[in-house]
Image (tube, rainbow, N blue to C red; front, side, top):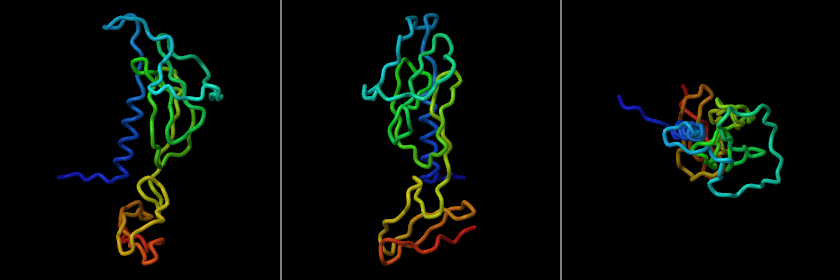
Length: 168
């Protein structure tokens, strides 16, 4: 049996893999490759407004762990925070369909942005953006009220769509 993934499920998979890649601990002096942990995590691009206020992070991280500071507010390109991987903090992009952003602690005690991912609503594309531009006569995918996927026809005006269906 062949499994087909929708663009929405691929976006969710990419987000999950991005979150996993941001976690992890910095090697300590007792690690196989030796050396001391970096005194501060380094950013991969050096661009950040350090003068901006950071969210409250509460208790300290576990000993030997370097935490990446999270950006002060959610945006389309940001540092999520969390434990540094190999002493580096990476910028993460494109949080389609994300909601309920909050700062939590990761498994190593570092502050990290967490969020929930929702399914696109009827009339939204796979990135949860309103589908307002269309090619007259073209069909696009849509999400039915029962969460199944169907198609809808772009009307002759190029700005609106017919009903989503068949659903169910």
